[in-house]
Image 1 (cartoon, rainbow, N blue to C red):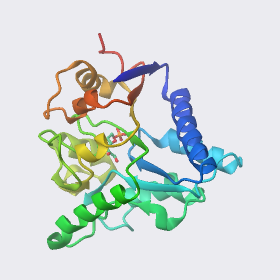
Image 2: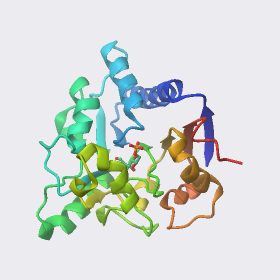
Image 3: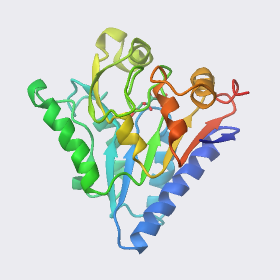
Length: 248
Ligand code: F6R
């Protein structure tokens, strides 16, 4: 695992966006599709801003891009302002030239009895595209990546999961109180993420300092699922000075 510390998230986010743009362009030149695994939440917002800026300035097209989002609350309707569907369109998809049929976001609106098959199909679709070329991640204070909460297996695939209390508490302000935060989510698994050819995890602010310290310096354990990334061959953690403050 490689770790890079920046003074703040602004320049760091631009560097991450540039790496993504370079990959998209390189694939374009080879006549290939570029498969991106994408995250929601506060951490990637400035990366998406920069990707939108690069597109609007004419430097970047998303016509060869296929995306798979990490997760969605369950239950959740796409019209809901709190849905990750809404988040992704608001921050990225509505502002770039991606083909709508190339956007994949787990649905939070599948009947319970169809969920298992839905998750198998999501996993299968990623494989059919040849796997994820670049996976963007944030990290939760529970140690989750995607919504792989403590206890998640190294071999896990896309599935429904019960959200950790700390995760629901951190989402409470977005939902006007913890009682309105869904109790479950559909998430890609640890194994789905670990199969990505390249991973960048973003961590900003003092609230992430403790979990980041455990992720980088602690033993590999399902108690802190992000520690599994220590075994990934091509992962970089990009953080700001506050998030890095507990590293030794
Ligand atoms: C979101 C996701 C989560 C978040 C994490 C950090 O799609 O998979 O793992 O990345 O909860 O959230 P923020 O960035 O809001 O601190």
